Length: 178
Image 1 (spheres, rainbow, N blue to C red):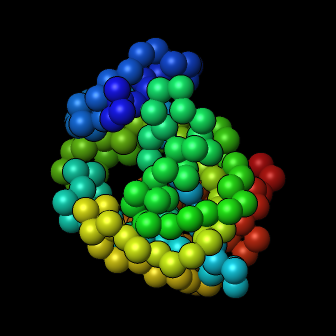
Image 2: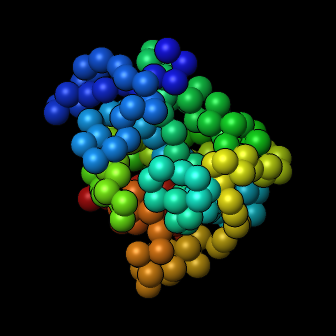
Image 3: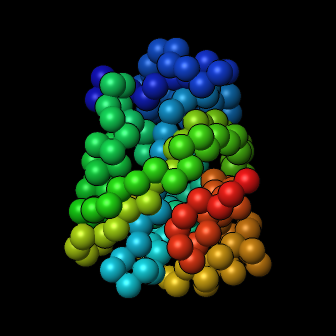
């Protein structure tokens, strides 16, 4: 149960659970996830490079971290849990910024991500100590530099980061009006 993810029907409603290890493949079912963008006290944004051992998008630069809430787990708890596990990082000021984000993407190896994935922001409260099985590199970057990099080389970033960037103003980390 601890590593189960919440499966969703086409309307985004819970429709069961499955072991996390069984859901990411060429026919990934729609499931629940989240993304988080972390800033530091100076406003820099934390970006991470996914470990080469990751099944999907290995070695790709992405947002601070992502994860899956466990069945019946509050998103905020899942965000805190994953920040500690993946980055050894404590967070403050956790806030939803794109609660209705949903995407489907296929990586070069054919693995599909198919997620309803609310997007959060948070502020780092301490140093980053990444788990090498999750993160191979990280960098604190100026929001305007990240926005410029995504605009000029979207292929160098995870598709979910590129899609989220359309809705996020990286200068203020607030949602843009549609």
